[in-house]
Length: 112
Image (cartoon, rainbow, N blue to C red; front, side):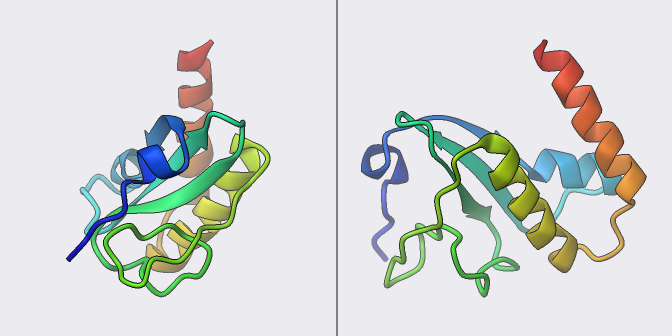
């Protein structure tokens, strides 16, 4: 299997592992995880980091899947995160919304 190197393909400059969010909210490490990736041109995209629970979603980068399909790109982190959270909630249906918001607030405060 040939894996696409998304870092060179899209000139990524940073990424965030959203499995940390799921783990914090549920208290358990998830079977599948997503990453938000930022490109040097300021665009963002969502990528499957591991597992297969997100393989059926369109618009998500899946570098281990053949054929590789281009992901949707978002003009801001907020837009990409909003979409990623919608996908996460479809896979992990019992996530507590208040705990998600608490996690995001803690992350935001830590980055200031």
